[in-house]
Length: 268
Length: 276
Image 1: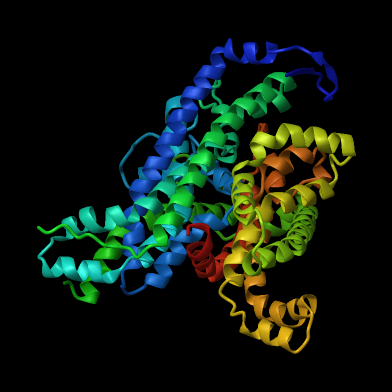
Image 2 (image 1 turned 30 degrees about the vertical axis):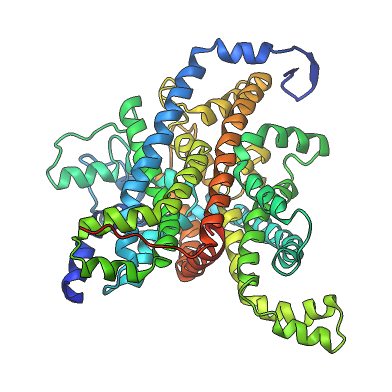
């Protein structure tokens, strides 16, 4: 809320002016809207892929150890490095993704993946999903491995199909873990700078800016520290809501875990 | 019920697309890193290339000051990990062994600090480091990485500490040992595996951090690896992609191997602690 010079000197209190500037800025609303899409798409996409993957990795099959290592692999690599590699792989002329697609005969002309905001943003979301899968799968695996087996046996005796087992036993019992995976992912993805920053720096023409990249640009490119701080505070508020939600979910889980769990298997 | 063989085949078929997409960047990295320079921008693009040019690695090492960035990364990651552990072992021990007023509150507080990501605080941190005269000083990263990792280390350590039986310590107390002696001579040796695993994950977190390093380190000789590699890509008219990819191979593959070897401990630790 202070007017701040480029070198961080306070230049007097300017009241709510910085916030006024933020709320009068069309780029802020665009970034906000895009942050929503980015967070929503990555979180939902990740969950839809991670759930079946976790169920497979929880089951017993040949090569499970290897499969687990492979699925967890993106986690070990810095988001920056992943994004750098993808930036090259997606190179519009000689990128190896174009090479793959052309050599397989799927496309005949190379595609400029990162030159247009809409394709660039889509690709960034996909990369975002890819790097979020390991963490989400880990949480879901933790939940699945704690699942009581007798519920399934009872269901099999009652003649429940695979889908019904999933719908009426796995899903309800996994709900706390799914909730936590969603809330944590929302927080992480909402805050994630490296993928978009490295691949497009929010460009072309601010077309892939989300709040964090916009904030970073304002602060360290254009030296508008006051305005950037105002955005920081707005983000802080949003995060606080999600964090509180997380704490509530956790304490509710703990309360649930204490009494003997009664497993309901709907008779079919 | 399917036989195990049938099930394995089915599962691998389902997993195949994901595995391919996960391995794709690695393939891109290797193939580009060993390519001769003049075969980078060929048209039409192709995976094939004429020869393995291993000299790319040596060339890159000299030209991009990779060694310097590597040393910076090692220094920051090792000291930050050390600091985080020294500070979190007592905290984790207290959370695991003692009852005290406000324990639940403290637990929630830890969780909340974990949610506050560097990017939201980066402006404030930058100004703080400015005041302390630590911009362009690797120690600013040591302090911030240690601080940002504390919640995770305390949480992980505590969940492992809980699984170490109390009997031995109680026996030591009976024999007249003080709590401090029993902590150092009896408990810590038992906790070494847990501490090592936590240390390695903290190390990897610090090794991979980008936002703070990008902000605090303003001159090229202070860059850590992620920033150094980013700086070769960003805002350049001509990017030496074979050097960049050789750099990412060297920076990521050792970490990826260690991580693959340890990931089951992470899964266990999270299953024990973070979710419950």
